[in-house]
Amino acid sequence: MKILKLSLVLALLITSANIAYTQIGVRAGVNIATQSLDDDDTDLSSIIGLNLGVTYEHALSYRLSIQPELHFIQKGTKLDIDNIFGSGEFTTTLNYIELAVMGKYTITDIGDDGGLYLSVTPHLGLGLSGRYKVEFEGESETEDVDFDDDGLNRMDFGVGFGLGASFGNIYIDVRYNLGLANVSDDADFTIYNRGILVGVGYKF
Image (cartoon, rainbow, N blue to C red; front, side):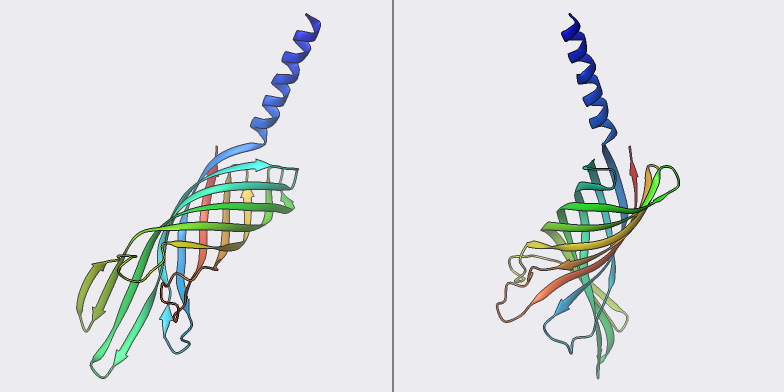
């Protein structure tokens, strides 16, 4: 009977420890997105895309943790048009579902229940849909993106580098996402996604 009671106590302690070191959360923010082309003469600028996700943080030690994440994220770029016929913009917005795994290291504490941390986040994305928008001399036209017909690879992957701060259950972070996959299906033309993610999260 004593052994059974001791086993129950140990089980409760282990369960409590696991609960204390794992947290489910949500994150919302924006992606200041652009793309890198192999043509340096192309005048590209950024777009503001949506970034929503769910997270699951598991602590490996007091300062080190891993955080799998599932995101909806918008990527793309804006091409400025300026020629003898007029000026305008050509905007590409691409919608991805993205799986990421953040490695997080807390470099210093903030108060009793917060901290400043650095992060590295490999990510793998799948293109779902998108939109092209042309605005020229007061006229506007949109068209849906077709990854297959438009010569775009659906798969995207890369790595993010971030800095964040937590305050209890709330945190804010900034990440730079470096795309490493050529999302162009044309062997003679390369397109890489880039982005600065700014987000606010809450852990339950």
